[in-house]
Length: 314
Image (cartoon, rainbow, N blue to C red):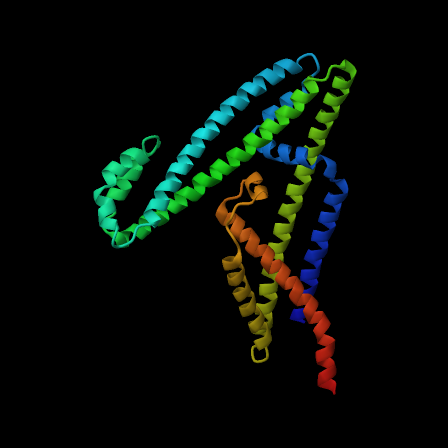
């Protein structure tokens, strides 16, 4: 009974996911994918840009571009500064990771001179210097490196998110600039109206996708909870013969642990766009892994069960 309920739950989730994917695919215009990607990055950070662009007409389009090009220069300058801080921290981490028990003491002795050049342009020079000076020996270095790696993961994510935003911003401004360069006033008016319509469409598509993803996550969480509850109910109601349900619970826990360690915390482009942290990405990827594995298990169970029953009868 528990297995049948589990199969129903798994196939229900798979069906809902397929329906949501089909709906989104039918509405999605692949020819405008690059624009959709740009808007999905820009809108959460700078919704004012989208609003201002929707209010632009051919007459005030040049003024709009002057303002946006000025902003683009400021964004690129800030991005370069952020990249410099990221690179400094990465270089520092690389040097520390290359140390051994034999080279640690010499590095610590020469650290003042190294720090002067390494952190010459660092915003947190004093923090890094005092942090390493607080490391008493090579054994304590590992804990310090771990804290720096956590910091670097955050700095890297912020940089990548900012880089993605600047790239999307620049591409979008280029689209608008190309329209402004059109000589024909009628074509310029039509192309501007078309781009404004596409921007509004991409915004609604992004909302549908985010809502669909949130719905899938909620359904998945409910499914996991129901599977666990049904398994526990089977164990309690028939403790002596419930070893199968107990095995199912244990297997689910094992699969979850395996899925978590297999999952990579590496930030993809979509993860950056959605503002996920490395930890959140790992949990999401492990959840997807478990979903696929449960679906595969349900399919195999349905396919193998008739064969097993046949052998038992014979």
